[in-house]
Image (cartoon, rainbow, N blue to C red; front, top):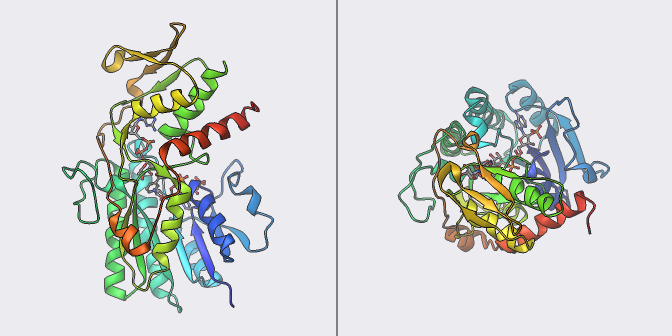
Length: 340
Ligand code: NAP
Ligand code: F7E
């Protein structure tokens, strides 16, 4: 049987790693698109680079000509757009750049798909940040969008333009609305990775303090390997549609800290309030402090998803719970620190 061909924009990121792994296992030919960078951007996908079904090209989704050339020369069956400036906090410092990549870049891909000779299936990486400030206890495909950042706002444009091209031009274009998903491959400046990495180093005397922002925001955290299974399934349906992917459980940042500390056998006593809140270890040493530099101009206070549509239609199932995820992330940090 002829092998399917996929393009992954954003192949060098966390989800790019897990999706590449999944598609290669399913015998796809995977074309990953990387940006030019002053340092080596392919650290996460290093182990795929010598496989004959894995081909990496230079490109950038803000460069229309590069997208058009790639799509017309590769002639893929499926395109997964994972490319984004994905940090919500950073989007307040780089709002125009974020909008260019996360919104206009998506439109450029859709235009190239519209003009391509063959029907291509398209996945757009949407996010729970599009719900933003919401009154719904659980957010589903029916929940209104009310984004609270340049990141979330740009992603709403991407979501709606994807629906628009689906309806106007009969393109197989589908949106995932994914809640936070984490893994050992997570970028260093996202809160779960920062907490796991810092507390592991603190436990083994290699770091003194963990500095955090808002401890009371609530997030619904899943495992990236489970979420790319859903991404894949979304493109294998007969008709394109939009799906929420989430665990349905939420925890505060402080609860995530406590869970990680418990697995590491670190005792933390909390004292104080607001910017003066601190975490103290058994010996009375302050190991966690709060700094306002990590607070955002606007915060999304809570997110908790209802993935019943994905469970029913995609038959999507999660394999990992939050404790499994934290344990795997700690194991990875210990390997990095060469501690066994
Ligand atoms: P990530 O680790 O930050 O990866 C983002 C990828 O996009 C990287 O490969 C990055 O390349 C690439 N990229 C950025 N700008 C680009 C451009 N102009 N042209 C081409 N590539 C570009 O993010 P992730 O966690 O894997 O998330 C994947 C996607 O899902 C993102 O769109 C994100 O917004 C969305 N999402 C993520 C979550 C989550 O919790 N992880 C939840 C919902 C939605 P470099 O390596 O060169 O930076
Ligand atoms: O923040 C709080 C912060 O940056 C989570 C992206 O993948 O998921 C991610 O966006 C929460 C926020 O992820 C620190 O204020 C406290 O309330 O890990 P985060 P995020 O903003 O939820 C969504 C679904 C995406 O789509 C995004 O691409 O943690 N927080 N202290 C902190 N956050 C960070 N980064 N660093 C801190 O020190």
